[in-house]
Image 1 (tube, one colour):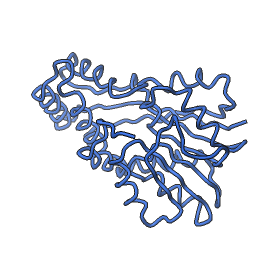
Image 2 (image 1 turned 60 degrees about the horizontal axis):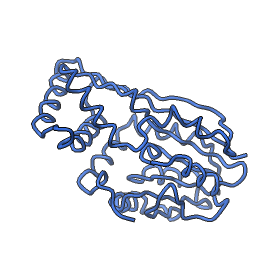
Image 3 (image 1 turned 45 degrees about the vertical axis):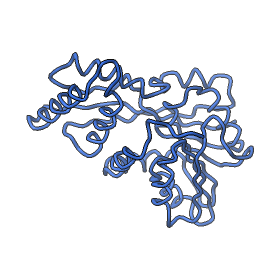
Length: 259
């Protein structure tokens, strides 16, 4: 599997910084609560990123449990393996959500957080998820609908253009609103759909990291220059200093059970 240009080594640390923000850690814990994991269970982390979910999932299933994980970024694999180095029950590898490298009915539970918005064939990914889950297996799928993103700046026209271009970063930027349609005809029962509002009224490591990732991606696309991005970042910084900063996006969590 080839590397994806969106996840090269230069931005791995920015993703890791996002995961370490206290309120992101709290959101991670809340998301895992939805799986109701038990000691000894076998759980799959689809798109493990820097490995924070995998490490904490290991604590929940205990020494008798097992955590498998796949991610399509080779750069992330090294970071995640480092973060899970003291968890012997964790096994991580490069893989594709549309072609999970596991036998049928291997897992009691699975989690996919901010993953499916990068997948270009959601029905295929759901079919694979169903295949590897045991009957009665649970899954949590959590993604931002990027149509809910608000990033207030003084130059609203520029920001509107930037956010439109940023959507090209995702294969399925509005995945949550379509997920229930894709689930029709599958063997999944939707137990619950919930939402988390991601709200920041000042720049913290979370929004700073997102700003840098967004700026890196949009630079050079549709005529957007590095100078344009620098002016946008200066605009955000000024609003932060003025006390007028506002960032918000909605993450939607679907709790599924395989019939």
